[in-house]
Image (cartoon, rainbow, N blue to C red; front, top):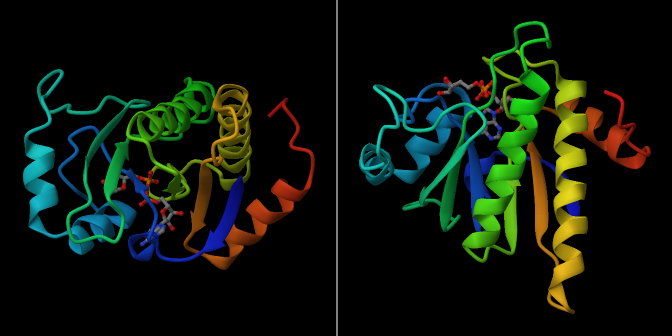
Length: 184
Ligand code: AR6
């Protein structure tokens, strides 16, 4: 099930929250800063132990890494790195889709029943909200449809899209109630 809410992601009692991080994965502004503040200093220490894949890069764009949530109500934080918007022709849609897919796969591997996403890349990274929201909804739907086929009666995962502004919340709600077009 996909649920759109208007809230601060750091307050949610879900199994995992997703962080819109950067490749260094040691905190930053926006939702990343809020998550680090709410989780406390152990989150930073856990991030430091994530191996670098190349100097200064713990999580390449489009990939995801998981740490505990420490003081957060959420048990896990899944850190993913969205693309910086450069006009849309530099692989941004594919990279953003990969963020959702890889984060959902990590959540499933850790037996999460509920996972909450912020609107990845749509803040500092400048991705326009509506195309970003279409990708988020499409990836969540595809993931749920795929896992549904394998579940045999277990409870479905809840994918929460946590909008920080009312405007984002309205855009998502409009899209979710439409049949989302696949030619974005
Ligand atoms: N709860 C939910 N959503 C939030 C919260 C919150 N507490 N705070 C902000 N948002 P951004 P990006 C929303 O800029 O564009 C960081 O410095 C915000 O309104 O946080 O992926 C990282 O370290 C927006 O809708 O992430 C990276 O360097 C959304 O979260 C860079 O920013 C994403 O905005 C990543 O940029």
